Image 1 (cartoon, helix red, strand yellow):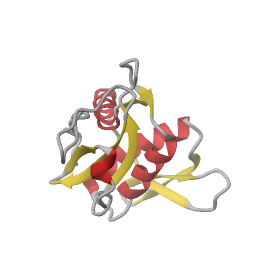
Image 2 (cartoon, one colour; image 1 turned 30 degrees about the vertical axis):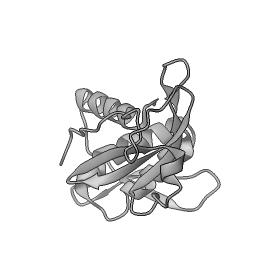
Image 3 (tube, helix red, strand yellow; image 1 turned 45 degrees about the horizontal axis):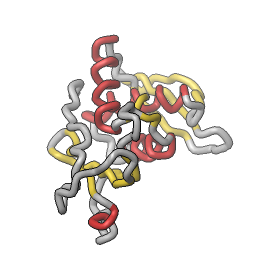
Image 4 (cartoon, helix red, strand yellow; image 1 turned 135 degrees about the vertical axis):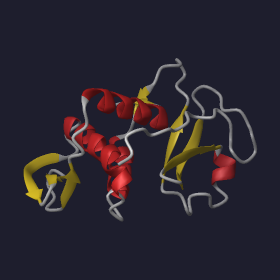
Length: 162
């Protein structure tokens, strides 16, 4: 099971036309599946309008903060990424999905239902408040250094504080 996610930060320029992004300027970030991980690509609004949203694992609208600090990411963006990581059941996505579930629970976007065992696996069931949908998340039993490293990778990937 992969524990080390290598993702690049925002390139600060458009992947298509190479235009530099200015502080406070809107642009679009997208994740492409790349081997066992993801590649992040950033696009200016002009290049994004050309139908670039097709074929990406996940994408969101963002901007470089005017003050240079990381900003808090939109919970809906994280929830979308969490949901898509659960599709297909790839075991290399288990640690990232687990950390996102913890973040979403802290932000009250997910609610813990309970913990159960399926053979050797420990599953934690979550739901969205006001919903009946259940999201089972496998517990990868990460130690603190692994949790910290994965959280930092997610911060870099999303260019935001978690």
